[in-house]
Length: 139
Image 1 (cartoon, helix red, strand yellow):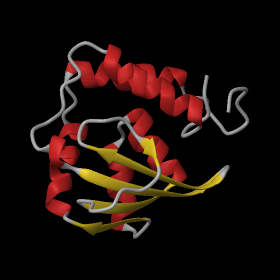
Image 2: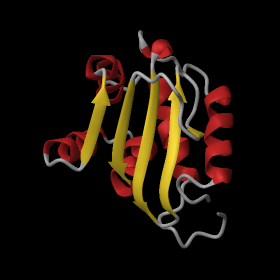
Image 3: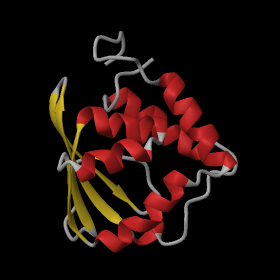
Image 4: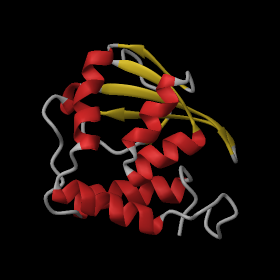
């Protein structure tokens, strides 16, 4: 099992995206370029991005659709368990901040609330390879 957002976790998730049958992206996602600032994690803040249908990658992009600042636990709920309700709740109480084109993010929100069988299978495997806490054996 891998610690969420560790280099081995990012590599494993990227490989899974290639291996899961039926993992189609919702329309409009291919144009998205999103920076994520994941704050208050066990290793400090994490700077990540998604470009189109790619997996999460380290670093920030220039010329992005949106920048999202999100707490570590909320990011884990969203990216590991596809728990859109946790992200929505964090947004409503100001713990998730979005700068940029919010309308471009609607495709992602719709996809998370309406997972296809391939997306559900992907998140099931991601959940299985993600350690429960930061004290996991693989970092």
